[in-house]
Length: 240
Length: 215
Image (cartoon, rainbow over all chains, first blue to last red):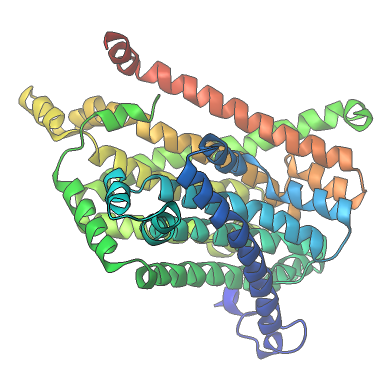
């Protein structure tokens, strides 16, 4: 059990450099980043999805982000702005926005046209259609986007310890500096555990928030797909 | 540009090192994902286990995985093999699901036809099901390759090489040019590899082109 040695040493669980304090810092950065990213990305994505304007830009942005080295963005911004919270925070928000934007856009865009038409036929205005029909229907994909963002932010916040930020990444960076591998491993296990637990919590939240009607429909679709052979059009569409 | 022009040799070395870290995991990950994806596609329980395990592994942040792996595997904590193994794990986690989905999307009628023509399961898998799943799998490989190229840079935080060195060094010595050159290089390499994979996919699936032409 040597790899858990550091983790179960009570000395590492107290004080300003103990695990609980670092965990709170890590969660603080993550929550702040996600809050800002959601405030930016959900309205923007909903507007783009609702109007259909600029959709290609959203998709391009989300794809381009995968190639962008997070460490490079982080050190560039911190180099330009200086050590502190602002530089890393901007980098984290830049990384957190595209997945939520893409999820919201795709969610709103993919709402069944017949459903939107039915809403209009019932006399709903554009705003009502968006808030009462399109957004609730888009919720699974919006939360999916937030889950991707959350993992991205948790991961990048760990790396941010390199640019003197707090959080759980400190154990990895500080442990390396003094060749204390036990501390590095302990910190890494905490980071991994935090990511897994947070992701599960959001998955649970998704079950709570998404309308039961939609979940039943999704389960039915998923079940059918396994039984029925999908037309081979889907195989070639991806290659185009 | 002056920094870049004065350090071309270093940049070349780091780029080469970067590719050595980034690309083998994609190949190994794909080779492992095919049998596992096949297994996942066989039974419902197998699918649940493989997909959930893959999701779990994919959730672990890269820097943490770089450190945890040596503890689990018994390799040296700063051994660069850890980066290659970690990126292989990510590729595998991503592709096993893609392979399973791609295989389940192969039309049942095609599989039945192949069986009727006398194809035994193994040969049918290699000659019919696998080729037909190439377009979907390749889309996954492109995502995995681009992610892998970008993720290698994270390793430089704990002293591994590759283009990430330009970030840590540029930060510590305050050379913004070096950082920007590193970001641009990573983006360019990702773009080039992505383009090459796209071309490879076209070459491997000539029938998609023939069908598009026939329409």
